[in-house]
Length: 279
Length: 110
Image (cartoon, rainbow over all chains, first blue to last red; front, side, top):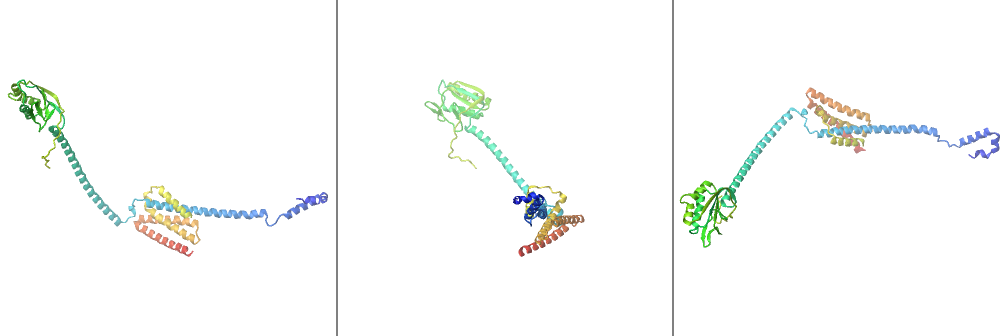
């Protein structure tokens, strides 16, 4: 670049020539062997060739991958395809399959009938059990009422007996009354606050009548559940307990019938020492 | 590499996508799979022999599949479908075995 300043006189004289020389020198200095134009033209086809090869390889790998994917896809689908294709089976295979299926069906049928039988028997036994339970419950109720464990209510009569004016009512007569009531079908009986059960007794003490360990105070109230007419008849019968009470002891007797006699008194169940249930 | 990748992709797609194969196509699918397997192994053998060409591979893949299917179809129409299926399977099996043995020889030699 400093070339033009080295010979200023020449430049002034023959500017054209000097300028040409300067240009020549500059051109001479350009390093040879690496002509950019030539290089560019030489490189261009090389890179395009490489990229084309790369593209071809890419395409071929993609194709290979696609076909392999297709193969694997078909394989997996076939593996998962669980339905047996009967079309490709031979006659012998089909016959064998049919006989096998028939045998299987038969055994399953047998099994089914067996299970059905079991189910029926179980149902029957369940029914029986339910029935037994029902009966047991009924029994429990009736025997509970009978044994005095359960309170009861229903149609019946209430008898008020005042203390005898002639003499005190004795235990035998009282017991007689209970017996009469029982005979006429009284289902539940109570005297004052004592529930009359099988083992109930009436005892004479100095202080009066005692029933199952409880002193009975006058007036005696006897409640009985049962057929009202029968019970009334039993008490009012000519020469019966009623007349005995009025005539012999001078007691006043009043019998009320009620549609809802409530007997809430209960007796505890005795522990049986000797009696055992027959199995 | 691409082949392994493709196989994996195919398995994954097959696991997740379950199309209903038409009943008509059902007997041919196993044959197709075996034929494609044969083509794949042939390609692997060509690869080891350094004469692998993607065009040849694609053409052999499809021609194998189509030929096998058509053969079985023909057999079904002639009433010898099961026999012809067996024949195709046997032939493809023999080819697969020979391809595998060639590949094995290449692997153990190289």
